[in-house]
Length: 385
Ligand SMILES: Cc1ncc(COP(=O)(O)O)c(C=O)c1O
Image (cartoon, rainbow, N blue to C red):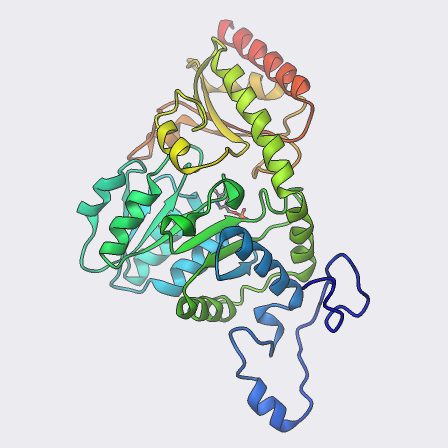
């Protein structure tokens, strides 16, 4: 909604209004009888969103070069809602093994039980995906770089194959955000963002966004969002709208710092590998360079192996600027740990060692480096002991 749109913005506020409300009232019986069927874009009840949500959806759609966007209460919900809208029992669903964990669990435990043929494919399969497509393949789920293990996928190669076979594609684009990669421009049908991360940007809300071009699929998706009861808080929509005001600035700064820190970490003797596609050493670097225009702030590292992975505890406990916690993409740096057992349980993994994941925030660069240097020192001591 524009600040010049005085009919809808009588206060002429420069910032968007927060419209709350479950109930939309009608002027007459006649009005109700006609207007209550105004979906998907009209309002008849709060479940499909208020003007605040619509304003946010418009902004995200513009960023994604999309005709439509649907916001939902979390990134996880964006993945599930898209699959639930289009995949049915009897369909075959292909999921990259490095897709977000909750999507894989949902597929394994719920979709399989509902008769969906779920198959996980190696994240770097690229053109090889064609050999996995069956007559009943309905959707391919992609994520680049992959959650925790950070593999890149040749998105354009996969979407060209999928389109040739009439298969839908959904890509989790949270790492790059639409600032650095616009999935729909590369043939993806559904671009997913966990707005919890960069778009919100301040670690104080959860939200997901699904962007797409096709009008019919938009109607299906809006209905699914509504029927599954995936209503999004107007206050959170306001906060994401505010986050979007600084999205590009934050991303450029956090991405720049993350690349410098990744290069520094790569040069440290106690760091075995840095999994970050903007580094020349990353196996997916050429794909990243060809498709993406920048890098996110999230990286994974593998330390020189220790006899006992509890030595990593010394690294974590020495840190002062990296709180330990789930999520990423906010203004505060964060750190998380994924044990070796998780890597070994996977069919396709770049390492059998524990992975440490770092999200780089807006703290001074030198302070972050100093903190990491101290933590590596503590890890070195723990290795000796
Ligand atoms: C890549 C990616 N996609 C989706 C999600 C899920 O988002 P949310 O936490 O909003 O459910 C996450 C959360 O960590 C994520 O990292």
